[in-house]
Length: 501
Image 1 (cartoon, rainbow, N blue to C red):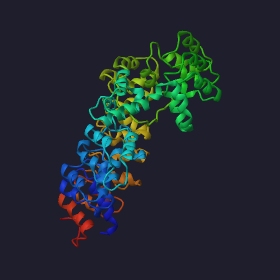
Image 2: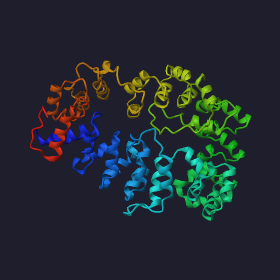
Image 3: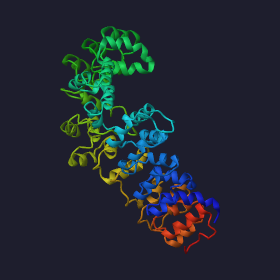
Image 4: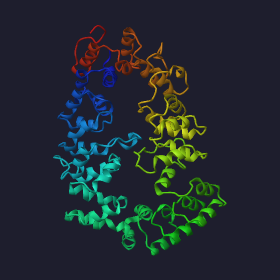
């Protein structure tokens, strides 16, 4: 067999679900090249293999493991104190943006505390501790519960970090931080408290620049002079969702000449009854819809839950975040039975929706309701997950990560015009004749990895560059055969890798 088959064999064995520890450990080595790195980053691994990667002298191996989202994150704790800042940074940063899963798994508290309180970025000096923290914050791997606990954490550096979320803190937490026994915490609290001081916001805003201004205008307390400046400059959009926007400014926004501005204001929970009635009869259909959609009384948490759904469309792949505890489960349940599709879409995004309501929404006449339920709810039926996989390619990577995604019953899709769908069907273990001659590479690879293939068929597929990777990933491949292929690839063994080893 040609040496050109080495890379496909290595990649296949690296992702063979039946490969035991002694096989996979051979791939935790620089000699395995990209296949070993892909394995360390991209699949679940036995404990012995994790240990081998954690203790590997080459930081490239440890770095790859730092991005693994398939193993228990508790096992990655040693990487938070790795000698290399690059390794720590990759652990903090999670998956790269273009590969980041929609549901970002939070890191355990042990790792978070270690990274957030570190005094340095590692022995190699490649990154600073602050740069690693920046990676962590942008990765969304800090759970909301940890954010909320930092203000009262025993470690002063975490209390100091809590001041960065000043607007999210309760009044009691803010007071405690301003009176903290640690001077560094008190100083940080005083510096961060500017966001709720209108005069300080006005003074600080010019230093924010054009990119930072929308954040300040949309979240901070605003002085009358600053509000007037926004109207004069035509930069009022952030004011529409700022809870601190003064009542007189909200009234002006409700009568703004731009319908988009009126639409955003129409959803605010602090509108007066006269403005609600006025916007409910607005000449613009979208404004009327937003005003009438959400009955009073409203809360800001409900406002944001609706806003996350409106205008995003059926192919939205925005990150799926953990429930915050607000709005209440009862509010989501009421949305699930609403006559308005938008509110049912909101309910479909809530993973805590009771089973009976989830079952009802799985049959909803609105396609977006069904799509959102499939992507968000743990009890979405398998047939719905498969339907969305077939009809909405944007959601396929996410759906394949869900435990309820069906692993059987896909044979009827084997002739589907979409190659991704055929590949899914080709992997079905009950398929009588896997399509190893399909014109598409991904379908051939999936078919070659089908465990229903005979040993004789596997041998022929291993020798064919078009199917070698899939055949090497086949769980029916005998263990001696895996080792023989690795001998050929890693050791240059003279022994023929043909059958019988």
